[in-house]
Length: 217
Image 1: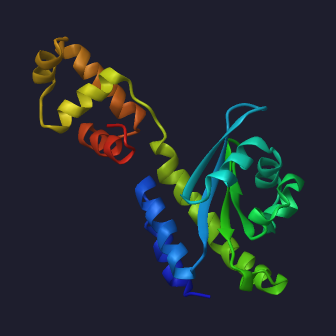
Image 2 (image 1 turned 180 degrees about the horizontal axis):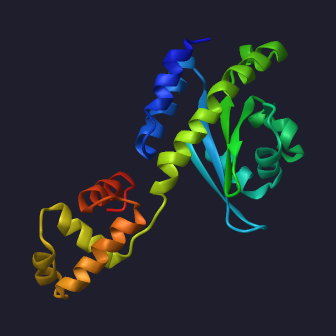
């Protein structure tokens, strides 16, 4: 296996959704996995959840996870790495034979698993156990980085808030934006304050950066 310090360094790099995607890509290439990703299950209420995936996972896998509650049960109740086919009886097909899960942790609101598509040489039981033990060391660190940085990026702003933050990113003052949009300066300041609050930012510039990184405009 690769150096522990190297992998820790890659995971420490995760401070936004963009860096999470890049880190997963780097790990995928480093270990030569066919596919690698992080899947997060976010509870909406007791009977529904949302699936968020990061990395490079096939769409058919995500569709299955969205429909089969076996995966969320595994995510919130198991700590032992396992093959997908052992988690869901509905997925015992050749397409999913090489899909391997490593639980990353859970909280009251959401939980996560790391997902690996292993090559044929890695399907030996002893090799799989070694892979599982190795990534159990790091999966919780990845989940902590997600909760600390990426989870906070999941926000949405209104069309008017988007207009105000766009003009603010061009250096316009609240008064100038009010003239451009034909609304009061107080209304502009209200929308910009909402952007700061929704993005959990410390000031207007911080909110602009977070909106850009999240693809809000």
